[in-house]
Length: 357
Image (cartoon, rainbow, N blue to C red):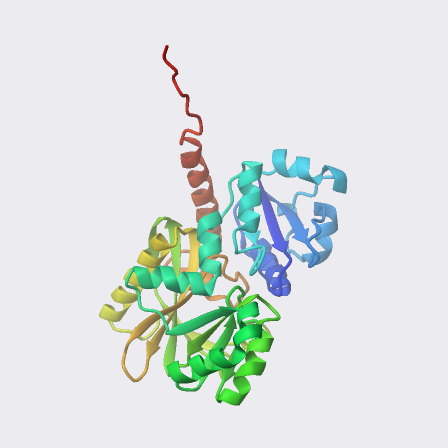
């Protein structure tokens, strides 16, 4: 039986969401091929031992858990030798941005989800848009700036936004997820406070056009060569699909599959798979689209490389609607991680220079 390291929590504003996702995985994973080691990372970044991590999870069946008696001083050695494959469920910064993926690479261990490059590129909304636009995938018009630029050129940025966009607009941290730090701004006088709020969560901010849209999501699965699920549609219970609506009130509703024509489904699936390849993604991604209600224009909004696995999360629900059960999805993700690891190990890392004479 293989040992699966379930890494959750993390140094992120999405820490609590990660814990919910971890509990959902423990309760929904029916495979008898793996014993699961819980590994909780605190908000301050401390790694807890499996025994300490038990305080944060509440599995319905403890039989799937493996809790080795490890002292904190021996945890790194255990990660190197005692884990066969890692399953990170770390949402947001230090989880989806390539940092934990780099750590797994240094350990020389397979892990689920995108690699270092894909994770970091998809995490930054500004970089994502630049890459997608270069591949002729339509994105919502935007501007971006750093905190130091805001401090020095606040008025010019406000003027640029006022000239480029009609209100409302959305102000977002460039590197954050779960709608944390996002504001819908209806007039220019409210733009400054919204930027200040976004800067609490990142050093870079984007301002996007606020469009009258339908919100469509789709799940992608694979290693570069990927397949897409049936799409789903979100009907927000709040003014927009914010953090509270996603994880607390649950007032939003959804429809899977979305009520779209076959042509629209084909186009959205094509954009999703192309985006997955452009950004060098692997394993999984939930890709969010907008369809303008007035023009019919499709926009790729953003990409989540470690989507939520909570009971109301769209990523597993769209695969269930496409014929892949929750447990089968988890097994597929682990298999993809191991296959990628094997392929990369076949690539030579040695080069010998022959010196003649």
